[in-house]
Image 1 (tube, rainbow, N blue to C red):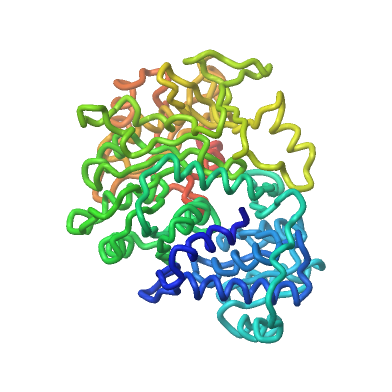
Image 2 (image 1 turned 180 degrees about the horizontal axis):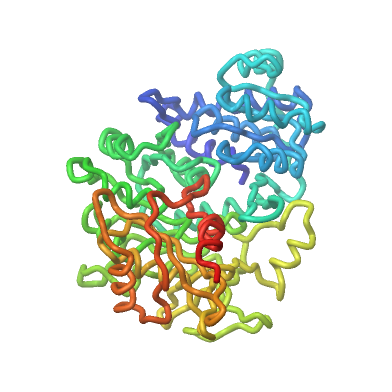
Length: 514
């Protein structure tokens, strides 16, 4: 299925139903379908051929998402670009992908202007919502290139999306995602979580990431996607109540913000059927709080750009035992491997490990990407021994639940012992004053590496570092407990809310060097 086919499937259930909504204004399925066809025709008449790359640089916006369906209808490849990236990172992505046309919002014109001169293959610039001297206004562009699209055009290999992933070092890589990858992710979502007729999905997180991919199963069921142009927790809670939202996705840090928001207990969230969480580990302590205060609707998804969202899932019902009590033993897991995905644990020599043994989480199946764009060496490395390597350390327990204990690069070796930073972070998050934490290993002449932490406190809380260290020692022992803890006003985070451990490590390295 093309990406546009999810929209068309929803339209087949009723073209007059609301499809994309923002600011209280809805576009119906018929309107979005028709406009995406006009966009596809204009792309082809502009000169976009099958397999050409077309980028979209925008905040959450219905027209930007409609352009994605137009790109798909035209037989081109969608390149989502995060507006919160630095200009140079986006320049590298445009250059790597060989983008020929860019749709962008006027508020990002400055970013585009800084890099467009260095992108000779970027031939057309179309501004979605304003008048920029060196770009064509969207409505003018659409009017200049009228006509029906040829929807038989398809990219070679079924490629439908090129997504950037850069990590924290080096040039960004382009993840090649195919129609099969997207169809698998969508099918697994529909298999794994509760849905009903015409679900209503609230998109607060960036549509360039998991929030966008999760809109496809909603649309395939004729559901409504309510789009938030900017993240605001108070507004999120109000919209859930106003639109009787059934589904949403939030990273753990935003869920913590929901739990700390003064409006939470005054809003009616009873319409929610599934509040997805993922993209980073979630504190079991705060997850249990969310189950009690938000409701029995939390659903975990575990994936990565290279295997979108659905490597493993923990459905809302799986958070509870048969007697209705919270299954605390599962709250630290990533759930069970999904039906169309094979998950195993591998050692450094390529041998598969038994249940309970820790090693790298590796994956096989139609969810896994086609490879890194124009980067055969990186593709070969991540595909060693015939499995996709996630870069995560974990294990499978006797029930078949997958536990992610750390990123391989974040494991700390201190005094000859392996310490998983994620385990220490979970112990820190169990302290009632701690909102978030980052644990890193710093060089130490005696221990090799010293476990060190930076923590961010909840609003209005005060606590001494020594008290937190003692608290953690009681739970996981002195070897794993941090030797030093700093209390920071705010931890550095990426564009999607993940804590930037590299920045934490760099900031603390000189201070604690011996």
